[in-house]
Length: 291
View 1 (cartoon, rainbow, N blue to C red):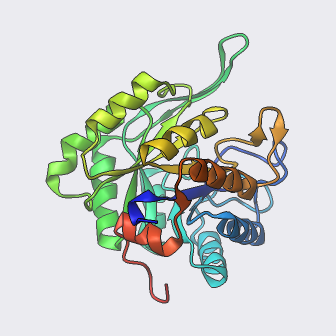
View 2 (cartoon, rainbow, N blue to C red):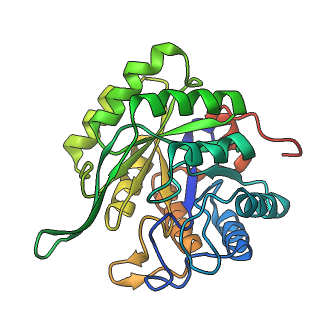
């Protein structure tokens, strides 16, 4: 099968908010992250997205010691691409957020593209349960991109709405992003963009012709987005960070089970899951020593 027909599957293992009380398969400890990443690799994932957790409390942490242990453990077990989060969690400063790139120099890292309301909602009563302002200024976008460039880290441009996409196109002429650009379209966050065909088409119309892209959907948008990506030549992100179920009302056994489902969706579209080596080639990654 030609390289352009391969589908990159990313597994986002934990995020900053999903807790074991919601799904006990959410990893907290280093060993849990390593083992879940390995299961996802065996299921067909070629990238793993990491938010580290405090093993005692389960709360998100930017601890370089913890992240190094997770990254080292995963790298020893399999050749999967490691993508670190620069969001970390609520209250992280810009300095703490970019520090994970400066210190660890991962192959990939998330780069959020605009400030936004980020909320949890009660969809039955249409009320907001809790919210934050997720701050991602132009200054942060440019500075984070430059730090990633210096670290040899490929930015995954996280786009929650059209504003974020327009922001990337505005600063792109500065030459701060490695080409071709790689986008992650995040669907279904309250405060961001809903997943529908009109929104999807607008995103496709605006991105550079040679850009690669992936879908990341919250809750039911996870697999809805996966089907769109599979048939339109994009890539797929799944994982307990975004959705705790495998089907409506059925908890996922782990992120790996969602990877298995994503692989089946890709195969239904006559595509195959990309290997880590193929994903590195598609995304223009240079790899790390020993990979």
